[in-house]
Image (cartoon, rainbow, N blue to C red; front, side, top):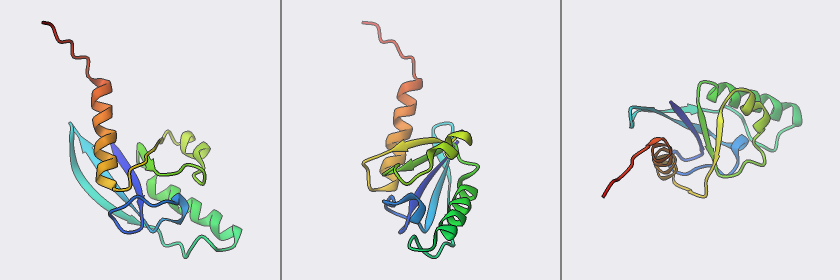
Length: 120
């Protein structure tokens, strides 16, 4: 499983999905983070012409195409129709710190998947 998180400083989640400078990608296997990588967006900025913004959107989609989940702080500028067509789960978080958001998300997945029954 791969999780993508937009970030401008590699520590905090970016407020704007399409204006982010990079994505921190986490690879998870068997309950552990086995790899972390950064993928950089070469876009010059969000104040560019509309045709440039469309090009940036395509570049971002290419950066996260192999990811299963995208953790964002705000979905309004994230074209979720495209992401849904790519079967990328979109998770909105109030967290600002990347690792906290990823660990909270992954912890919730584990809780949902467990079918533990405790007997007295």
